[in-house]
Image 1: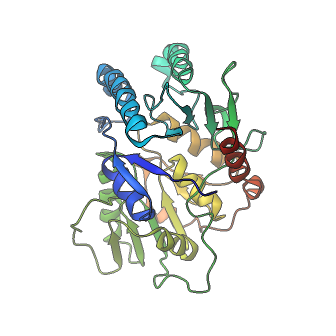
Image 2: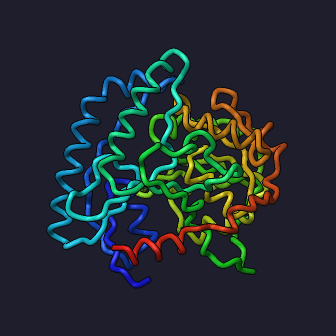
Length: 331
């Protein structure tokens, strides 16, 4: 496959992708930055921002139509950006979350939100889901079943780590504990502070990847703790490979990376993100991961769980390359 790919993103995702794929062409695609609550529910925070979100969807669509004309694009793949579709070229929407999970007090809104999601998807030619169609899957009820009347393809789990060759050259660091931080503020920083506070009393070799590709400064920490704002994909691979115990958010991309390497972890969902809470519970019930809530986070308990090898068999049958070839032939 020898297509010219242009990557459009904004802020931290743009910085991350530019470092991961330096040979590709990048353009800035300004997006909405939601403000998250410090509490355990985000529903009211998101409700207050809904007019801004709707405005951003229309703005994304207008900006994308300009990109299509300017760069003479043949097709567009939108990674969960609702407004990133074009009426001029074939447009694909990629998501693992067709079905929204809401907290019990507002569960009555579920039907309306799903109706809105389907309305958005009707702007696209098709929907790609990075998961497996069969009963053995990673996202459960978030992406199963597909919407009726929407052309949907399950393309297998995707991970930036799946194409890295296993090497005898292991990481120079072999941490007892690897903590992978990610996600929105303020909860990213809250979990970081919880971990650093506990690590003053827990004297084990620890590496914390802060998930801050744009950040330059690093706070002072005890000698047995090493902090990195960002490392390369190859370094992440080696650290996950070498770590005895791993702690991570239950974001879907993180889960796919860990599954690609056959490594389990203790998952701490971002408070109020019902998607992450559901995924952590689902995958714990399948015996793939352990779940721990942020308010109960205790690294002494975490250290009881070594990151043993787990075998998620469907991952070996990823459908992506086959699907991409077929799709490109149709354009």
